[in-house]
Length: 113
Image 1 (cartoon, rainbow, N blue to C red):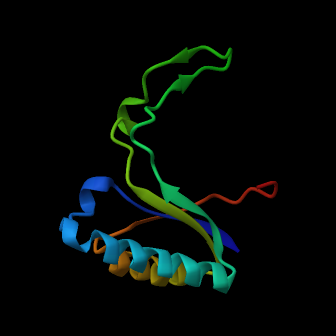
Image 2 (image 1 turned 180 degrees about the vertical axis):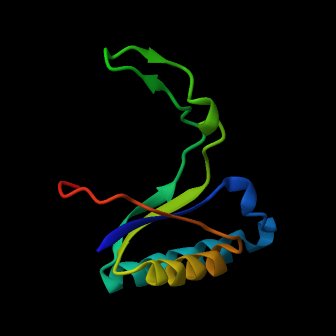
């Protein structure tokens, strides 16, 4: 089976504040379904309050990011699924619950991960 990253940037989730509780519950319901189906690996939201750090091979830490990931935020989950078609189905469920499109990416196979 292949692992898939399903994600969205925070600005994509343009939901009225009055609907946030409902959207949150809908999103958690899809995650519960994924867990019950045995396909859930990991998920969550990026904590924007804890800024990103760059850690070099020698352990040096700087308060920066790669330029292309400066705006990395939002929510994501990793699911392990039998096909790209199944990943698209799960991404559609999450998109419906979160009320925003989801980006779908496939992890490369690594026998040790």
